[in-house]
Length: 457
Ligand SMILES: [Zn+2]
View 1 (spheres, helix red, strand yellow):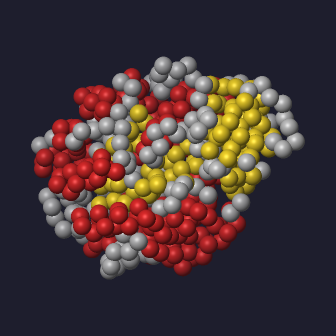
View 2: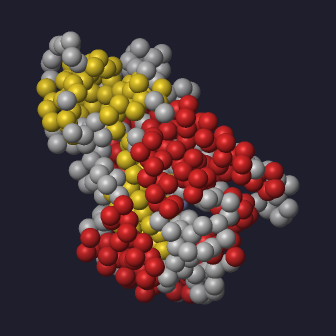
View 3: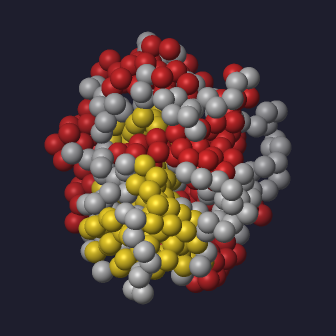
């Protein structure tokens, strides 16, 4: 049993002072208010819920900073970036995945993410070959070392485009038949032990047939697990979908499937007014990845009409060009401000933009990870929380909701003192307990892969 005394805590019923949280077996079992610090308590400044990183391709962390130069094409865009990403993907073996994911997950926990939803399609060894669960096992080891809760999303990737063309050589190792995919999903149910969990997913409408997506949706319903899919990230994808299905991607999905809160639509960048309203009303979560969407030049999600229709959002760092949930939220709001020439766009039905963004991302992320009651601190909830240093210059002078505004908008070093995941302290005195080992293994792997020298112009 652990007890934590917080001078301030953002609980499910709002900000409270002098709070004792009692944690046992990974859950909050008691909360009392107006307490005094006792000897056995861990003293804490400000306690807020941990966040879910609802969209991750762990291996892409090794790409950060290596694609920011003008390539041989006339214009760089998502599709030219994807060629570089494939060059990296082709080299990711089991050891590389484990070492990159461990470093990434340590960074995530250090910045306040307590759960990661891993959207995984590197199913085969480099160069193709037999389907293996070894890559999943590598992710589990990395998550255990970093102390992050993993929601594993096995991804079906079966074709090269809407026209059904075969996968390119670079995509071969993603390839699974529907039977292989369902076998792998079943195997994953036995490999993932608490606190980790399983979801299911399709890469995109262009990479998965309508029939296979229907089967995946059946499994998601039968097993009550989240269903994740990339959708409408790029205008080209919208145009190709119009050509093949005579409908915009989100439109087609809405017309062919019963969307509900089990669905997590990743990006959903390009939606018209009707699509925005229908997705919002369906209860599906839209996972926004603002730093990656900006980095790849995807386009801008229209947040205001979506939130006005009570749409649910989560955030993800996707390609991990940066790993910081507060930066994601800042980018999310700033993109809207730049486009609309307004301020405090996300402060809908809430006064403070920082709290509005934070609470929406916490609850939407928990739903996307298959834990609908998560993302808030209350009795019975998972003990996943962030302790902030209330002496930090960033937070001095802030009370209640403006604390979250300061965290989201002030930038610079995060004043994170401790992070608890599943009842265990993973960050203490601002430092992740596994940071040295993770950094050393990561450096070894990056040196061994040496892929960026080959990829550079
Ligand atoms: Zn993605």
